[in-house]
Image 1 (cartoon, helix red, strand yellow):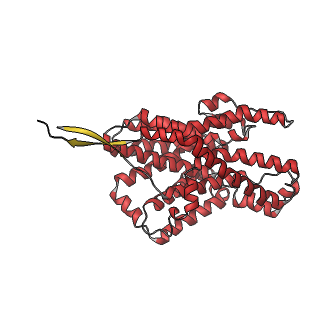
Image 2: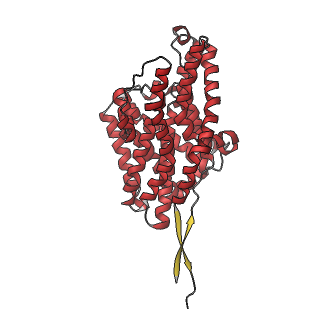
Image 3: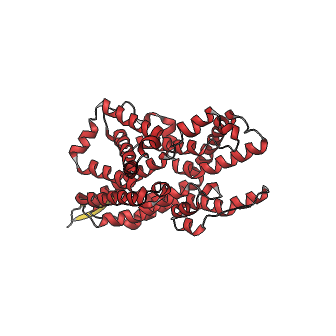
Length: 388
């Protein structure tokens, strides 16, 4: 007689934690270097950091999308192959326990605490954001129509909304397909995303609309499917030559520095720009996780890898800390020199953001994460017992 025993499956990629942290750092530096001083803005040093070096720092968000598509699809494929189905409700509960507590804490700050503290500081709140869009995880559409919210803590949540939209529909879609045919919905989404971009050649729609961003996640998912379903593809990734690995990182540095000049210069390039960049990002993910000839692995960078565990908190909270520090330095009159804006303010903001997020992770998020473990994907294996 065979009973079923459940075994928790570990799908942890240690080299991705460091990647997450550097994605956050890219976004953090994109949001830094704020100044209203015309003299500072005209400074070559300010222009170098704000425009040339980190003007495309928001690509860290694109990287997060590709990572999410890869990891979530990898997990869902593993689950379906092990148990022949996807436990959709359990998947949703895991995502809720990971995302919602801190997300709604940021929403509370943005719509309640921020306007109150702004009034205490003698300023007038001017919030244009619609709270219902944030409660319904569709705030990217609110951002598209109204621009950056008055509360800076709300400004980064648009990407969390897109990820939640993805988490809602993706397991449902995959539940209708056999694993061998997962390429069908992935390819349809990629194609649909390109068609949307072709019909809507508008910068903000390309950057923030779900139908544009979803292509990043689909490409990440395609990478996961190929790794798990194609032994030939996985072998090719494992034996990538060093010259090709170097090329991958040079290509990423190139698009990070020169995206606008080379990938946004024509209509046809703008259609495929996001696909090209996410393709490079996917190759970095696959190289880090599976290549045997890597020059380095992100897990070797211990500090960034440890901080990668709290990247979600770093992402959600950093803009709040930056705005507070900028407000304080402005009030104290210590933001009137270029070095103060370029070096001092970002350094202080980062040094405060990290411990705040560590405290948030250990004392606010972790209890929910422990509860999340109860809903982890478990592989059912038959256990044969002797019966009389």
